[in-house]
Length: 419
Ligand code: AMP
Ligand code: GLY
Image 1: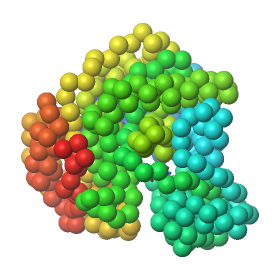
Image 2: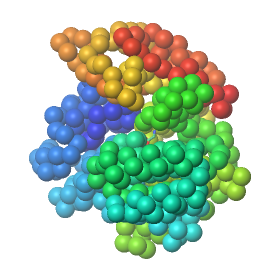
Image 3: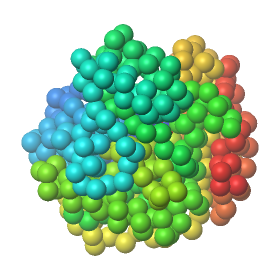
Image 4: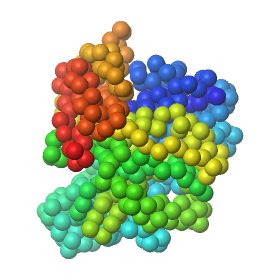
């Protein structure tokens, strides 16, 4: 088995951990953590040509794509043309994440429950403002990919006017903000559901919950995610089955019908409302940090599922039922998700990884001589697995406390909803 992982974050380190027993494992570009399990290859995730030639030259059996940007750019299509199997959707299927305008109209056509919404293009600023004013409390979203910065929660029309001005007039997100979706604000608790699919059948992974805000008690701006845990008890077996029937299956059928056969991981971000689960967003890949809890819980049983997702036959696969819980605490640089300094020495990595049942995943780190230093907003993810969620949370915090770097910031309340 020769496997190539694309990406360099905590999610990709968790993927490398799952795939560590492959005969040959490559990660492009990877990070100081992934090189413990395989060989890092200095190729950018957007270098589609370079990745396809590397995969062909190295006789790669499967490429596993972590982030959304290469998928939206068509890496799965290019690999397919080059005769290389890929875990991840084609560009037209990835539009379920890369175009909120497409995702919302797709949901509407297919009767999939989601927040009420309207779409505006670049020259409809006045109309967009008027609709936002009519809604009052609402969410203003850039249609394109915006690395987690594309949704602004607006309490009133002053907020929405400011958000629309930033996206549509100032162009703060570039082309991603040329098209806008304005949504009703849904009340409820959020949960993330992941499936692996070959386009026909699917397997369900443990539902997770992410912590998007930077500070405890969900205060401060949204981030990529400050921690996660799984399974999330809010997703009862009943809710999961409703989600499969009303959301997951209609998506797979609708995408196939519309000529956008969906393969890979589908991430449904849900709001559990009084009227049942509604879609906040779809992502065309694993969540991060959610992957850092969902993947370790499943372990190597997932390797075959990745192959089946790419090559077909996932319907014959039976994944073992969950029996453990996992929690992940993200250690971030002071200032994130705004600007922050980099290059600070990280200590305690070895001690943390020696805490029983703990895994330290690298995200924004860099090797400088003999030292590992900070190199990004989200620096590390510390995951612990245990028989119960409270024990997993306790171990994750124990290990996270052993790691230090200047400006280390973490949330102290990961998993509070479940506790
Ligand atoms: P998105 O970029 O669509 O994933 O949105 C980012 C985050 O904003 C979500 O995870 C939610 O916390 C919040 N959010 C997005 N849309 C809505 C909505 N319609 N109602 C309430 N919260 C939302
Ligand atoms: N943690 C949220 C995401 O990966 O989109």
